[in-house]
Figure 1 (tube, rainbow, N blue to C red):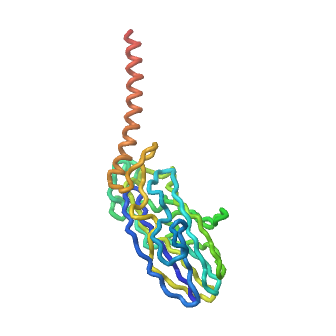
Figure 2: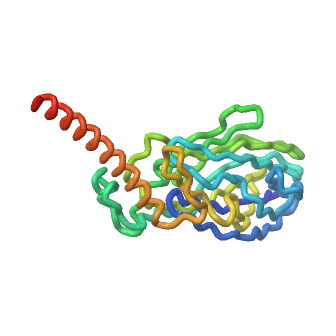
Length: 254
């Protein structure tokens, strides 16, 4: 008999932030269901949970946000657990000068690069890594997370990283996707449900680095602040160089 496939709605905006809350509409499945619990929501194992898995809404290159999700197989059958990113959309939101200077030529609305940089890691509660990869790869192939026995509860530790090595081509980009957990019972049955929220109403927002934090509401100004930050660093180097040249000239004149 089929188990319930439960999915969560992620809207990850590393420069812009907007993540609507989406209610979960559970599908019925004879023989039991796969129940989802977000620790800390005070509701236990339920079909509907609007508590975000990722509560850290400021994400700069080099930072990681994390959370936990527990799944319980309440059916009479063992099941294989699978994770997949669906409805994956990369948005460009325009190209800023640092992006084009870094070689970004995909400036059409759907030409974003963010999902190729964001890294999702899934581990067991004991720390064993079940899967790690980019959202882009998770969207194309999915990930097998192992099996779950009848009556078993499995807690999954999930982290989303924006690597420090990310280039300027990600400025102003945003990524929206659904992260879908599905269970297929040993007799081949499956069921599908609607998505729910995992990051809350403000999404995940990038901060400009160097210790700065931007408002969780986001806005294109986020990307502009990143560009200005780089410009100020360049100007600072120029000013130091000019001061050294001026000092040398003064000593030479003396």
